[in-house]
Image (tube, rainbow, N blue to C red; front, side):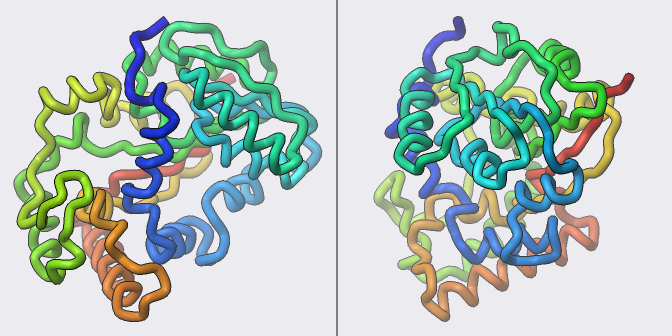
Length: 295
């Protein structure tokens, strides 16, 4: 079993959800529209609708975390049963409790180390992953195991950070991020992690990042190229983040959801990111991949 990391701590994972760029409802509506064309239709709902048939047998969720993904697909009734797994026993316990509290049945939970342990026995009509593959060092062995448990017409569907390893953005990207940071008033540049005003975004310190969590973005640049090699790509969706992910981390908590001025400002950042991405001046940090078995 791999050594414990902060991902074993449910308090950390719950706190992290409030700090990431997608904590903003405005950002989520922007991302929904990128994938489905509808600000009210999220990526998972769209992927199920566009790429999976009705009345399927089994689904597998990798790195389930808080359990929102398996509860969402269970609620739509497409699968007879769902198996969900995660590295951290505490996380699994919380996900199971949440499913029970919401009255969601048909989910079987497993504590599982994706780096080293075999996946639950297939076949699965769909394998889902959200923000977990960029923590995996042994991507090739894991993709091999996923391929082996997919049903003949099964699909791998994931939403992942695929930007630079260890968040080592280029000088050009950092300059662009800081250009937008400088337009924010002081109250929106207050960093809840340091308790200080944030004047400039710095590139992540690799040594400190590895010390905090050796799995963080360990091979994020390889997630997509290897997925295309191990699976037959059916569809890829750009999922943004090239500007918003490094810009808003932490300070997103300062934006008051529903406040007209704050919502307008984030909307303009979303529009800027989309425009820069379309112009080829910015690479998205996240992608959604839908792939099938190679044979």
